[in-house]
Length: 490
Image 1 (cartoon, rainbow, N blue to C red):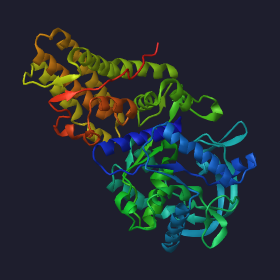
Image 2: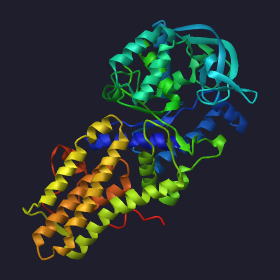
Image 3: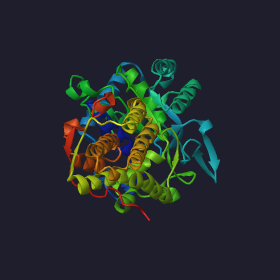
Image 4: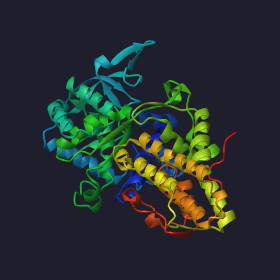
């Protein structure tokens, strides 16, 4: 569920940006190297690459089930990725930021991370990380090191100059405090396993999995060819969407690697919280997982997407359950947005032969709804450009609520003798539905597309130009058939 949440969250931002006429390149993929993968393959009696082929296919298939709009799916076992990692390594060698020494310390296989002594406690006879709760083991081996300590001051200066590099701000404060406490040089190679990218000119060493994995963002843009169209168009990346448990790698190690290699860091790293079951993080080991595929099969993909995006406050951890999922589907999707669409389309079909026009009879109630909508939409771009999705959703659903209230108050079914007024009410209602559907499209692409299709809005017009004052619909429109969008759960 955590993977589904991260993926859908990134997809929502990507879809919104496309709808706002931005060029978008949305990347996801699989990180396939490291001791954890090697051990898992050995346990299955498989060659690591064969094992990775199997696992990667599961995640690639999941992108379709989650209705992701990703432009690329990268695997860290691809040749293009090897080329990028080798080039980055060479740059760090040439800059003098990598040296050979010996590593002694605590290492977590499951986290693929090193921990300081003050981050380790003993529990039930086992050493574990206080940061992740994962077990750790003492490791001593020859290793290449990255001079992370040399980048402490430069990183703090970078954070200061780029105030929104890390969002939400609570995460930014965590990272800055960690860096201020002092950075130690980082081990960036291992000799105790073989599954990974070999260190150039020293093949007994395997490049540390995070230096390898993080480079995927560059690999997908055909780095090191900095003249490539993709690289020139999309680097530095606008946004990395990640879970808070890997924030340290993305917000400290990654910009340090890039700055050392004379490559611009991404513009922003957004670290979201954990998905909780009760008060605990969902994990296989705790047996408290809600399976996203089961939810999709039972309730629908739009329902899962909307629920996860609404229910979890994106800077904090979020607790989910089937009970709250059903409540969310009923209150927001079935009773609010779905009901609004159904009642308006049904009335137009039964009373207007699917044709509606706009007259000049604008009432005070019409103007009030138009003004309320403008007020609720004026900050929506800013909310999404700053990853404040919860405020965005709240505003859009409020527009739907106000439109439902407008119809209740204006009672078009009582205006059949005043055809102009009835049509005006219905036309404004459809205009509202069009705007709401475009705004909800990043979250519930399937249902919103059905509505926009029924409104006969051309694909190229399904954008956010109405936020700048333009109308979505023409004055005279024909509407198509619209079936029930969301069944109420009883």
